[in-house]
Image (tube, rainbow, N blue to C red; front, side, top):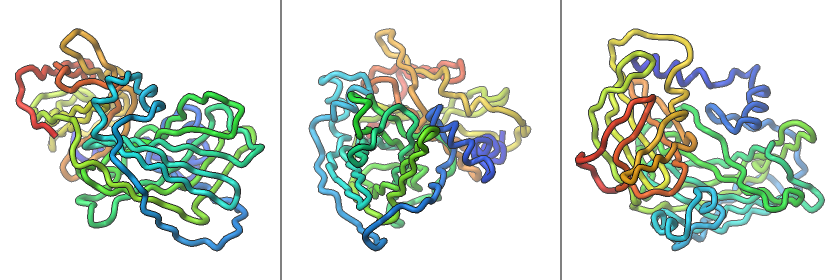
Amino acid sequence: MDGRELKRVLDQVEPSPERQEAMLECLLEEKRRASPMKPIKKTVTVLVAAALLLMACAFTVATGLDQRMLEYFRGTKEDAQQVSGGVVGVEQSFHYENGWTINIEQVLADRYSLAVLTEVIAPEGTMLDGEAYYFELGMELPPSARNQMASSGWGYGPVILEDKDPEDNHLTFLHTKGSRELGAKDLLGQSVTLTPEWLLESGGKKLNVDFSEVEQSCTVTLPQQDGGRTYTLDVPIQVDGETMTLSELYLSPISAAFVLQGGVDDEVTSGPSDLTRIEEDAALNLAGGEVVTIRRMVSQTCDQGAGTVHSVFQTDMILKPEDVVSITLLGQTVSLEGLPFTQS
């Protein structure tokens, strides 16, 4: 499997222009998306002139994880200490002339991924119920921080967190992004600009709100270190009947990331790939016998020139990386016991 085939596999999930609307309907129903989709422009009444308003977020490295994030990762207060070094408090509110408010509340980051907790508040009288909403939050690094080309690929869209009152005008989202989607090898110490862009509802009322008419942004500086560890490996993995190499594995309390290297002379295959379903049975096996499943794909990107696939996942719970003794991918288990690693 060479770089061209890896790219073909990832390109299979990119929608053509004619299918964008249908793909968006599917995305909202299944919470899964391919490469970022552009907002559907509609006229929104704006009483002030369109302008760029860049605001520096007042942020502090927090000692406590927001309770909503803690519940999402099925963690306890003790578990929250495992990720305290990656928590950044933001608490930035954006108010729009159309009556909407966006609150960017907290960021949780490690070496290769970040999760952003946001709250959307509709004008009084607008009920936000159900799960058929997609909120696009732009994430961007400054040009000086991009040490490689941004990679196209796929991952899941934002998660709508549990709504305590489905009949009110509030929704809380958790957005995730991988470092290579942003054009960086890693996110440690990076400054990321967050920009609310649009909100779309599938079916029914077809709510469509464009926040980019008057752009408002804030910039958050991510922590310099995290609690992860990196293993350098050279393990063969069977993918679509071909042999690839698991060359790197990174584990943090909330994520697992790995690099698969393809051969340059392998035959080009066609059809669905193991790479697009790799999360289905992937798991981290702990020393105590527990199995932590990989919860959802943050991003899977392809470096065509190098013939590598970079995959970043969220774990199903907060864990201690030192407790992981092996990883299972595509039915193949790789032991980590006794292997050297680098601490982040």
